[in-house]
Structures are given as C-alpha cells and as structure tokens.
Image (cartoon, rainbow, N blue to C red):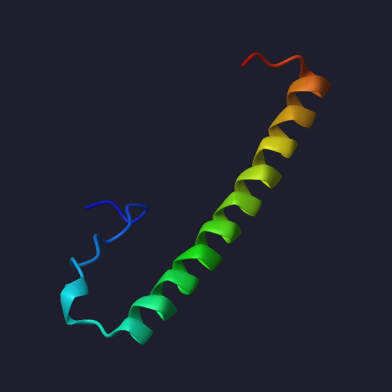
Length: 58
C-alpha cells in the first residue's frame, strides 16, 4: 500500500449503536462533510485563479 492511500476503515455495525450514538455520529459526519466541501471550494478557487493566470483548460 502507498503512503498517500487512506487506510480503509472497518465497517461500523450501526445496529449496535444507540439512538444517541447514531445522532452523534450523524452530526460528526455532517461536520466532516462541511469541512470537505469548504476545502473543495478553496481548491477550486485556487485552480480557477491559476487557470485564469496561466490560461489553463478544464
């Protein structure tokens, strides 16, 4: 395995989690999604700026 590759997570048995644990997990995952979307927006903005400066193609 390459160092850059993420280590696959073990599948979580959702049936074993309580309602509260599931709600906490959902909130945590939503926060992670928001962080990923913010990083994606930032990277797309940087790419657009670089493309405009250097005449890059999509």
